[in-house]
Length: 383
Image (tube, rainbow, N blue to C red; front, side, top):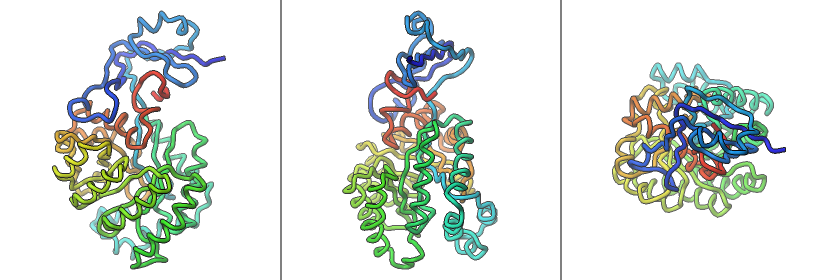
């Protein structure tokens, strides 16, 4: 027996139906709005979308279980395309020290920072890490998120990174969609001051191991001061692409056009953070399918008030997405509604632009736009 459901009577149905491909420019504001709309769902997939009066008269709708959405907005579930979901308990001491002006070295001296995070992951059992991640996911779902990308990167060692990725795999049992990413975040302490040797080890051993066990779909790397150079990032991403990974890259600070250019050349799915993006960066992104994923939550919790120039990127044709960058280390919010509010208040985006950035464009940033991000026939009924 097929399971048929009719969501009916929505005061506003935001379908985001429109031209194929990531939305940019004026198209970002096209929400495909239907007044008094309905969605007919069969076995979890969207069968029909349109005015309630038309859908209610379909033969299939007469046998459907009904969800009355009268007076409500019905829209695609949020796609959070950048999180650090598995990282142990929240590090509130680190956060308090950072707010008080402490730098990374001072936080480490106080017993916090990246090494402390890696030790916590090493000490905690996979079951405990999974339970903490489930709690974070439950918070995300309560605020409307139905698809989440989750990165490794906190483990630093092979054992730590594989533990995180296996927890990602265990979380696939949940109804929320989860996309796993292997993040090369920083040099392991075992390779201190030898980043090239570390990358050679990651590319020659860890990436093939992750691929062989099918523990990640994406490979990601931080390209900034204190992490990896443009040349090192490109070497890593080239090796990852040869193994069959889809690609991402993090650029938290610095306006080096070379990073964005190489990301576009390598057909990266997204370039994330982009605090110091320039018009040259925007022009490169505008001619590509690479998504500019902006992370206002990371800026809000750091207290810097240096938000990415969303208005400039949009006006120059870049396809923009929004994500939380949730992290137990320094960014405790998994609420995409908060990210939309920050985007409108602090990044000069309109509500419609922010909704599209948090749904359809975010789905493109994780390679899931064929399945989620808009309410269209054949897609998952993630509402």
